[in-house]
Image (cartoon, rainbow, N blue to C red; front, side, top):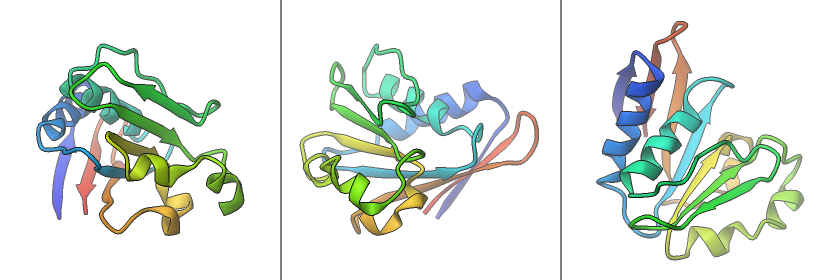
Length: 137
């Protein structure tokens, strides 16, 4: 387990970029944290760290954004609006989880049973208006 304290969105984004250097094909990154806790900022940094120039936003309404222009493709999911396992199963998560890219899932804690055993869990906690505690499990 590792803990990082971020004092700004820019620091969270930079940390995501640093994290990208260690990520490998087939990785699944399960993100957990309240609204505004830094999950999407992390994904912005991760995408940039993998060489993507895409404009990263949370896929809250589309459920999935794909960024394919970097070192590895990124499949960015958001389970916030998923009501149940049956709805999640229709997304075909396994095809992505065991594919050729990196899967990043915001709100993974809504359906933890869907996350593969090799998933890297990252928890984001709001400490203050600007400070976040980020724990990698």
